[in-house]
Length: 372
Ligand SMILES: [Zn+2]
Ligand SMILES: [Zn+2]
Image 1 (cartoon, rainbow, N blue to C red):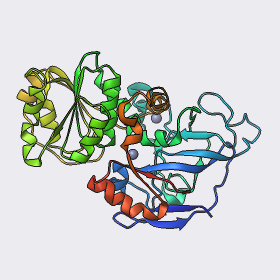
Image 2 (image 1 turned 45 degrees about the vertical axis):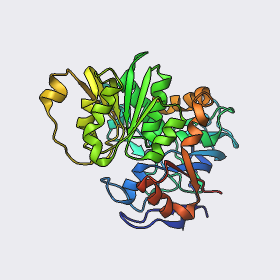
Image 3 (image 1 turned 60 degrees about the vertical axis):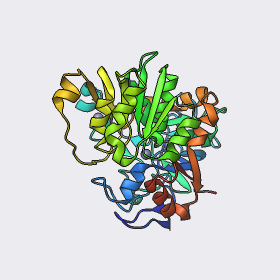
Image 4 (image 1 turned 90 degrees about the horizontal axis):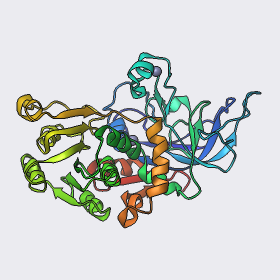
């Protein structure tokens, strides 16, 4: 029986359990898991900070694996990946963790924000362990019929794909929302995985200067290694002066675009203040509810003509482009690029330690290798 690391209930320790074999419905695919990851959302899931989570939970939303079995498709055409190729045993693939966005509802068709589709299901988050091996903290991952499969180019190592992990499509979405122009100055608040990815992508988008801010020196050091132009280490007591430090690096005006990747409410007014008049502010870090914060609508938004945009999750286009961004630019980012974001790889029996390390920020990115 395949082993999985399960969060039995909110606030409960992770346990390793045996999972029943995959049902292999027509059109389904079974993977041997190569890598999954621990992200901030997994910490929030363990702490019970998301609503409607079907515990016991098998986490791990973004994963990469090798095809172990492809089910017969019941007389219909065989299973193909999103590029139209047949899926075969031995292929190394990833898949969109978001499943069953309907394409028929008001959100999908009119608002064109499939991330808000009410039918949306997510591996490792809104599917529970009782639904099967639908999370990457498991020796096998079951791809239900219709899951969108993306082949990894032969030139892209699976380790690098998962070093980008779920943070990279989120950052690609944020960069789309940020509409960075060639020569812009960009500030990124927060140097966790989403912030580091956003900073890398801002450079690739042609920013003349990227400024990365965080309170944790170990994470900023990774940003420096990635060739980010300026890093600012904030003491917690120093947060009010973040905008002054950014303005000092931008001729007193502030940056053209700021991308918030902290999840900390006080970062929001500070981020507005470090953005120039007529600039753009993208909020992507508040995936879970961190609470409220006072801000001055006259000074921070209206008078300065600030454009504020939210950015929730990612869709298939971001996920698909992630694979090709990593394949094309993976070797061009300084200092080993994405590989450098990974701090440590954990086995299934070490997930409590992994969650604690991610929560404390003592490491940047934790990988899971269930078959190590
Ligand atoms: Zn829909
Ligand atoms: Zn995630």
